[in-house]
Image (cartoon, rainbow over all chains, first blue to last red; front, side):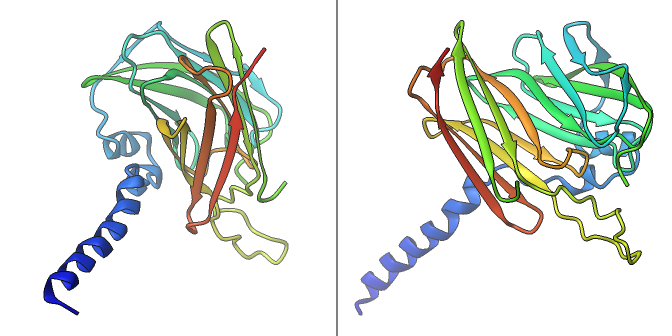
Length: 146
Length: 105
């Protein structure tokens, strides 16, 4: 094998290795997700000062019969909403989910979450370097974290 | 339900509503079995959705998403026939993929 060919093959091989790494741009933020306190979860995500906003709507039941499955709907009407973070303060690990919206997706999510006990469900929207939030109290009658 | 994905993408009034159901146990690692042993954590950590091959959102999930995760999201410039793909990866590196074409209501 010519030296030049070897170098070419080396480049081709490294390109193959690098592509899948780039494809997984979003790595799992273990410090934030494994935090047992709301504040440390927020700092793990780099979230600082949060302002309340009436332009974020959380639709969730006032009372949840079964904390294992609580359906929540979150919608932001704030222009240029970039990401949505969902937290349940009184869960063993408060950070539930973090969604980053690209071009073409509205800042809107419906999902089903686990709630260990009665708690606020908090939704945080990132816009540039600002954070906006809304909360909704959900009373849990039967815990869902086991 | 295990290892299955169900998807629907319906265009209505300019907005495409995508609904996704992923078959996954979403074990927190804090639950015990009948022998009192902890059931190992087994949950989806990363999810992404793409429209015609272009990423439209990426998500990270913790153990607080319910078993057999359900998700609805809205796309604002999809057309009938466009293809929505959702891919997930769990904490064991296992992945799943679902694909659906947008239909008009």
